[in-house]
Image (cartoon, rainbow, N blue to C red; front, side):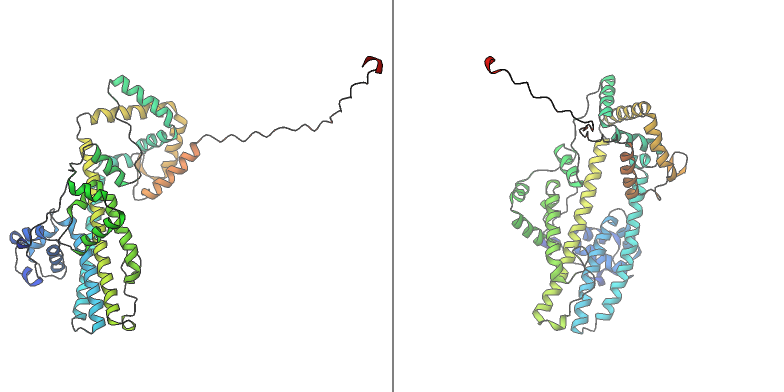
Length: 405
């Protein structure tokens, strides 16, 4: 499990842009590992063309490229607020800072595209992508959801035939945090339950949120316990709450987007104006921590998936599952053919789905439509039948003679 380091103050050295102009990769690497602030400074130097070639290669290499987007995003917010403050106070550096901000935004857009392409490449190489692009495999999986009870019966039969113990039933995972907490409980993440973690889990929501706020304010004094898998959900909830609370004070476009400064600082007392700028700077820090939370969640989820796949019996379980899917398709050929027919318009060639046309949102919508089409019709409620025939009144019993009473 990745654990950010926490160097002692005498070990930390804060870099300046001027330091980086002649600094090579060998000297720069430990300084980047030492401090997020140093990483931000290096990202700014790279964006503005002040980083030597070897250092630039290091920054864009496998050790730091995943953190580069994070650093550039933080730098963008910080320098935007600095530019706003300089413009308001009439600082002569405002024009230069605004140009620097434009360079950082261009570098951020490029880094984000490179990150997205890496993730697309990783997905294309994954087993999940092979299923996503295979019409037959997709149809069998969707048929499973159309016939869940029968599939479970076939799966049990296949496990019995293979003489393999079925895996423990897993509850549905509502989100990535559910998956992470399950993985930590199953031992797929090596997460130690330290006294500090127990203490954070026991904190009230307000006390925990204050700790998260302090963590955001100090970029190089990270509270590493917040990165524990069992605290990741609470951390994200607190960050979202802080963003919701801060956005109105910061005059932000939304809790998730700083946006341009719309508050008229000249109309405010000087102290109040600086409070707005301080709120904007704090919101930038919260956004950085939120991005870090998202990235860690993705890394933890990938680690769980990889360690599941590395288990010795993983291949045997996959074969049993696949055989049950094939038997289900053989039993329900009409339903299987219907799904294939609905997928056919999205194929680039027979049996191959075009993921650029059938993206994840469209795929989910189509799946819901197909399952609704395959669902058995709901029987109409039975309405009591009222006869329209004339009802003949039943005759009253004849009166008996008084002597017989």
